[in-house]
Image (cartoon, rainbow, N blue to C red; front, side, top):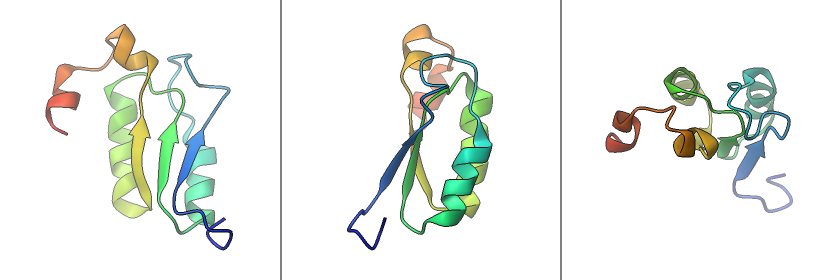
Length: 85
């Protein structure tokens, strides 16, 4: 992908997107190992545990960020997540 000019990838697990069932980390980890450009995760964030798992993954990989939708609207994340950005 980088060879084709991609500078960043948004990886959306469409099976998890909008379900509030939590992240499925295995496919994301596989992508992070396969590419060397920044990746933004999306799809399935449920609560603070998911954010913490992504923070841990970010320390060791090229994970750049996360897109959160329904968890924000449903209020399943504490306000401190947004205050600490």
